[in-house]
Length: 225
Image 1 (tube, rainbow, N blue to C red):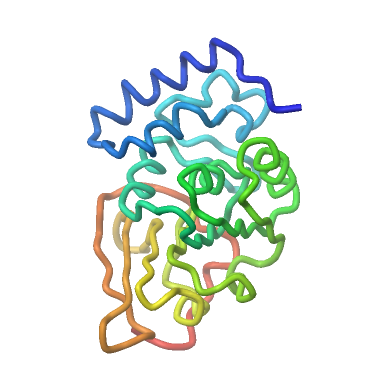
Image 2: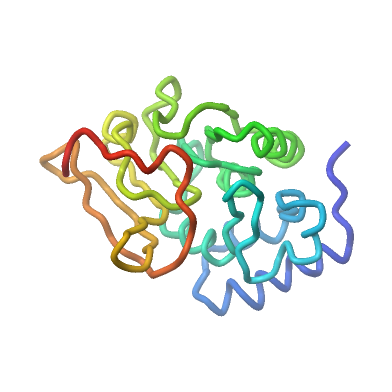
């Protein structure tokens, strides 16, 4: 059976969109519509249902978080997928962002290393977003068999671009996520390939934020940009 969508949660989802997202320049109508419909409460812990739509980041256990709705909306809007785009969500956790991309028409590969989170995410997507394929594996190798990707989305912070990005990102693709630094606040970003260097990326900083590092993302890369 589909997951239940109680009237109270439906009202709260609409309040999230109208009070948090629209006043903060989230203007893409398909994105707003998808965020009105996806039951985010099934992507948090059972005792967090009442705050699932609050303007806060929620802990999922073992150092993992579900990003606040506005952070997710701003990053997804920045790489706005179109029908049949191939998207890799790295650190898909409980599946909210993967399902959001799928609701926008993308073909999504959800990569997660935590089995408990992945099982919750798989169940969520089975109900809400059937065009999501789940892979349980370390995050720092990507998923080569479904590449190349039009979008690689890091659902958490990284210190650098993992080596797999150079091989698995489509020539005209882009990446988005949060770049951490030991010397300053983390920054949300969008990145695209350098025109003359397929291993290099042009990074556009969007805003400062805070997110914990994704697992497997602390090791140095073997090449430089």
